[in-house]
Image 1 (tube, rainbow, N blue to C red):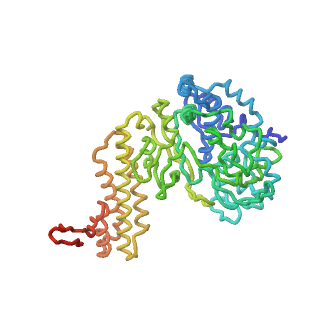
Image 2 (tube, helix red, strand yellow; image 1 turned 90 degrees about the vertical axis):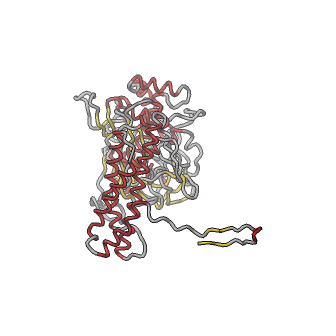
Image 3 (cartoon, rainbow, N blue to C red; image 1 turned 135 degrees about the vertical axis):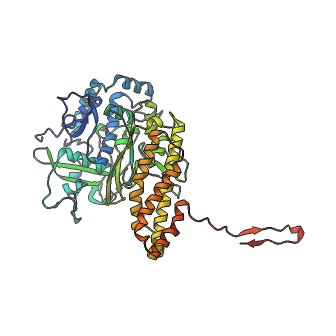
Amino acid sequence: MPAADHYDLWDRPAVPVRWAEHAPPDDRPEAVGFRDLLTRAHEIAGIAMPLPPALSALYRVLYALTARVTGLDTPDGWHDRRHQVLDQGRFSPESITSYADRYRDRLRLFDPRHPFLQDPRLAEECDKPAGVNKLVTTRPSGSNHSWFQHAVDSRPDHLSSADALQHLLVWRYYGPSGRCSARTVGGKKEANSTAGPLRSALSYHPVGRTLFETLLAGVVEPGPYARPEEDLCPWERDDLPDPLSLTHVVTGQLSGLTARSQHALLLVPDDSGLEVKDAYITWAFRDRLPRDDDFLIWQISQAGNPYARYADSGRALWRDLDALLRKEVPGKEDPRRPRVFDSAVDLGLDDLRVQALGIEQEGQAKDTQLVSASTPPVLSLAEENDPEAARMIATLRISGESAGSRLNRAAKQAWAVFSNARKAEDCAWSRDAAARYWPAAEAEFWQRLDQRRFDGAARSFRQIAEGVYDQVTQTAAATLRGAKARESARIELYGGRPKKPGPQTARTPAAAGGTETETP
C-alpha cells in the first residue's frame, strides 16, 4: 500500500475551491476532498480548477454524487424532494458519510482493484505506458514542439496526484480519436480510439451563489422509468466493463454522466503515492458509445444529423444566450437548449447564471484554446419565467450577429478589391474587424439587457459596425484605389446590393394564340 493510502479522494485535498463570504474565516483550506465538497458545498462559492474541461468533467461526477446522496436519482416525488433539499440549505452529512462508507475503496486514485475512473487491467493488456507527458494535456509529448514549457519524454517531471486527477478527467471526456497505446483484449490487439464524448463541444452549466446551489441546479430530472439500482457509475460497479461490448455500460442518467468515456487510463504512482510518474492511455471500447448529454446545445447539420455546438474561443457566450433561455430557437440549425436548463429554471432560484466550459479542438490531436465564460444571473429571464424578455434577447442577439456578419463580408470584399484578390476570403481586415466589433457588440448587448432597452438595437449594432469598418479600412483611404475599394464594399454593411431578378416566364393566354416566352 502506498504511503498516501492510495490517495483517497474522499478526504485528500484534491480539488481547489473558492470560499463564500459566510464560510468560517479560520477554516478555509485551499483545496478539499469530495467529502467536504459535498458536506460544505453551502460554504463554497465555486471550484477553482484551472482547466475548464476538467471542471466540466468534474461537474458531471459531482452531479451524480449529488443525485445519490439526496435521493434525486429516482423519479418518484422528484420535484418535492429537490425543494426539500433546497429548503434545508445544505446536503445531509449523514447521507454523505453513508455513501462514502459504502464506496470507501472506490474513490481512491491508486486503489489496486478499483482505481477511480481507471482500468487496472491496462498494466497487463497494454504493450507499454504512454508516459506522464502524454497524460498532461498541456504538455508537449513525443515529437511535438515545446511552446509553453520544456518537456522531455526521457526525463519527464512527475505530476502531483491532485493535478493528475484533472488530466484524468480531461482524457476521459475530451480525449482525441486516432492512434493510442496498443491494447490486447481477448486476442484482439488494437491501437486506436474514438474521440471522447465531449470532444470539441461546449458544455453549459447553471451556476448559483454557492456550490450547493450549483450542484442542485445541475441535477437533471430522471426519466419516468429510471432504475437507480441498475444505473451505476463506474466506481459503483463490482465488475469491470467488457471492452468488446457496450452492454450495461450506459443504463441511465448517472452512468451517462460518468461512464461514456472512449478512453481507458491507469495512473502509475511513485513510491510516496503523492505523485504520478507514468500512465497507460488507450482505448476503452471498440464501438462508439451513444453520444448524448444534457449539458450541450444540440443542433441539426445540413445533412440532417444532430451535433453539439462547438467550443469556439472567438465566440462570446452572449451569442448563445437565447438558445439557453428558450426551449426552441427558430433557424436552419434548429438548436435545442441543454435539458439541464429545464430543471434549473424550475428550481426557482433568481441568481442562477450560466458557465460555459470546453476546449476549441479538432476530433484528433489538435487542441487550439481552452474556453471558459460565464454570464451574469440570467436564468430568471428564461422563457418559462419571462417569455417577452427571452424573445427580446433573441432579437438583440440576431441584430448583433447580423451586423457582425455584414461587417465581415464588407471587410473581406474591400480587401479583395484593394488587393486585386481573386475572391473575398478571410484576411487581415476581416480579422481586425472581428477583434474590434465583437467586444463592442457584447458590451452593447449586456448594457441594453441590463437596462431592458430593446428598441433601436439593429441601428446601434449597425453603427458599431460602421465605426469599425472605417477604422479598419482607414489606412487605405488615402489612395484612390483604397478609397474605391472601401466605398464599393461599404454597401455590404447594409445587406449588399439587391439581387437582379432571374428569368421569368411570361404567359400569353393560349386562346389568343400565345406561346410561353422568357423575359429578362
